[in-house]
Length: 233
Image (tube, rainbow, N blue to C red; front, top):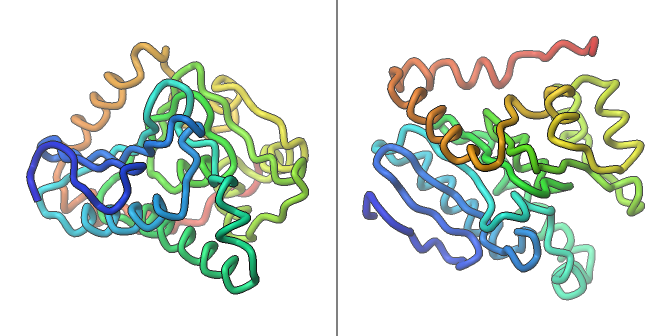
């Protein structure tokens, strides 16, 4: 595995590369606003595990290709073919959750670099990252209620842990899209910057973190992630 450039992990729609101590995972389906296909889920699972085990990596940045989206959620164009039976649905959902958990429990700190649409399953992937930095053009939402879809209890709890029950209810009940400024007020993201400064802001944050002691960060990540969140918001 080279220390620079792209690593082929089974899907041209999910790119992975290393730049020194920093790994990049890029959702590369810009024609569909970086919607996540089943092949991308398999590749994400593979890359997340490889990056987590790589002693040369200190941090991972997750982003979307192009200027329109981090990710607009699942690629619904393949639902008819790949979710046609109860068994197929279980396989699809199981793979998606396994890949998401591999990202969430990666041994290295993770930063979601968000511009454009960050919707549904795309927002869930961003919430699985440790830190979220958004451009001021970002749009967030979970349209499950508007589309008549259910939402897993674990995914509901994850959102509640981050924004509190009041904002979680607004996000779920309304199904609408929220601006970057609204997302910041909800604590859905850590920071909002002008979109022209987004990559430099993310790189600066990554470099600050990678200068710190990796064993100390690794020792802190799990207890911080698993600490009970205040529910009074």
